Amino acid sequence: MVVLDSEQLTGRTRGHVRELAEPQCTLQPDAARAFIALHAAAQSAGIELAAASSFRDFDRQLGIWNDKFRGRRPLLDRDGTPLDPAVMTASQIVGAILHWSALPGASRHHWGTEIDVIDRAALTEYGVDGVFARLDRWLTQHADSYGFFRPYDRDRGGVQPEPWHLSFAPVASAALQALTVDVLSEALRDVELAGAAAVWPQLDEIHARYVRAVATPSARALAFSPGSRPS
Image (cartoon, rainbow, N blue to C red; front, side):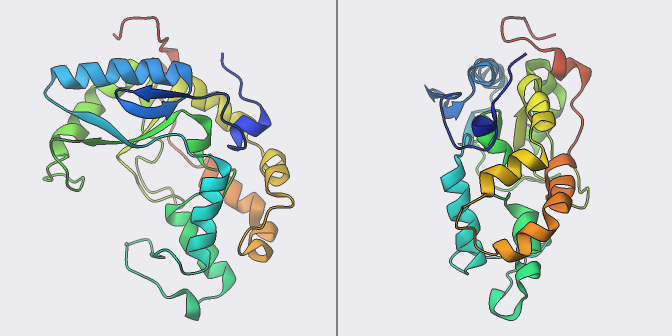
């Protein structure tokens, strides 16, 4: 089992990931091998699977967070409606950011196990009748055969559903257990975090609601080994 250390878990180093040229992305090696296999299978089914986002380091996540808190990036409510941070309290802004973006150090993308995917041949929104509907159905049928699952499959009162977000279960499940409040707290110490005064008092709640509240991967996904043939 792959065990990530505290700096890897919180994106403060990138020694646990590698760059792929095709499909272009940055992933932990086991996740990379699994994604290459998933990509090939999708291609055989006529789907041009591509990574819109993969590994993201701490500083990048910190920049996204600070920009949203300070109004430099759009701030949205749970329904995707724009909000005006100028008329919101710091706690309200923090809550709005967390619906769509992780606290620095708490993003699953730090682990190198996460991929936001699209079908390049069908660039539009997900939905039951949308152009990505075929990709959605294909992932539902086949993703766990390659070790992947969708952690944000439905609304659990934390992160908004993200049907495009895949997670490599054999590594991500261990990473989730290892990313404790203490590990997250240490990563945030002495960091210039916008809204820190509103974040620190609710760090335990943020961890429970926005880090821990995810789907449980299937036994098939957890048992996948990059050297095995998908069942």
